Length: 124
Image 1: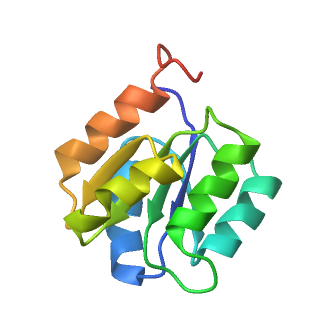
Image 2: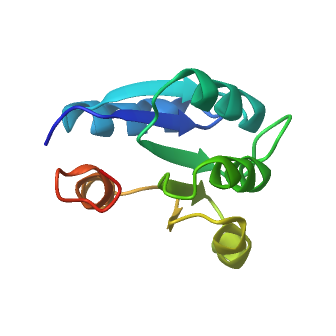
Image 3: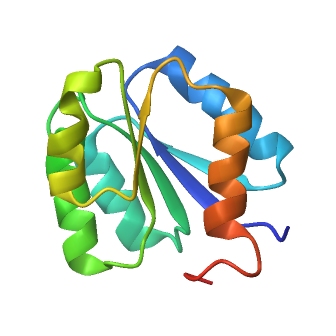
């Protein structure tokens, strides 16, 4: 798998470090956005290949940020993360490609990375 840039948009430092560890171990570079507004700004200044987006963040929530990112690039894989299963429909309506309930499992994250970032993935 070749090195890709993955943005983790999550205001929770512990969640960020867990995801960063898994994504980095898979050979990818990670950038961190601490809220939805920062995620949009970092998307504009980086060649982001995949986004892990928390739903509940300050300034601009993950649903709004995802809808904005998808309006810029509908092919950008956005994986929504939340502690609440009840947000699944709202996440899908916002345009996310996958939905995951925290705590995330390493094997699930690895499957997501392979699905969207491998050389044979549709968006590469």
